[in-house]
Image 1 (cartoon, rainbow, N blue to C red):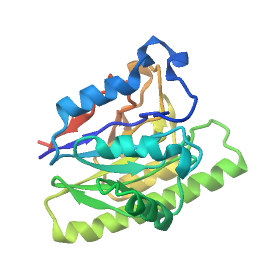
Image 2 (image 1 turned 90 degrees about the vertical axis):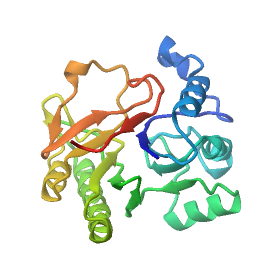
Image 3 (image 1 turned 45 degrees about the vertical axis):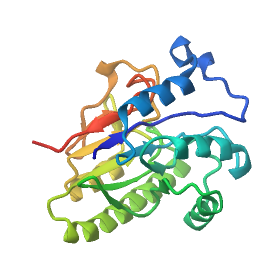
Length: 237
C-alpha cells in the first residue's frame, strides 16, 4: 500500500473547457491521467488531490468529473482549489458523495486523515503577492487558521500513531521565488511540518520554485509539472 499525490486534474467531462489552449502538453490530458493513474496506483493505495479537480460550477456540472475520480484506483482525498467552484460545506460534500455512491472520495477541509502511515493535513491557501490587498490579507489569515485547525486534528491522530509523519497539502504554493506567505509558513514551522505539497502553478521553470517555507521542503505536484502521473510519497529516511 502506498500514498500518492497529483494536483490540478482540471477535468471537464461536461464543461466546455479544453485545456490544450494552455499548451500542447495538455492535449488529451484526461486520457493521460487515466492511463498513468491506473498503471501506477493500486486499489489499496491512497491519492491526495490538492485542488482544481473539476471545471464544473456546481454539483450538477461537476458530477461526471467526480465520478471519473471515484472510478480511478485507490482512495482519493480531495482538497479545494481556486477553480473548484462546485465546492460546498463538508456536510453538503459528504451528502453528495453518499447520494451518488462515491465511496472512494473524501474531502480535506478543516480535518485530517491517517492514511498509509502518514497524517494528511491541509487547506487551499491563497495567492502570493508583494502587495496583498486588505481582502487578500483577510483570506490568508483565514486559510492559516484552517491549516492550523487541520494540523490540530492531525495532532490528535498522532496520539494514536506517534510514528506517522505529518504531511501538508495546499493548492496554492506557500512560497514562490523570493515570495513567502508568512502566516502559512509560520503555521508549518510551529507544527514542525517537514514536507509540503502544492499545485496551482503551470508551465513553471524548476529554478523559479522555492525550496522551503517555514522549515518544510516544498514540492510542486501540478499535473503538467509531474507529467500527469501521480507521484509516490515515500517514508522519510
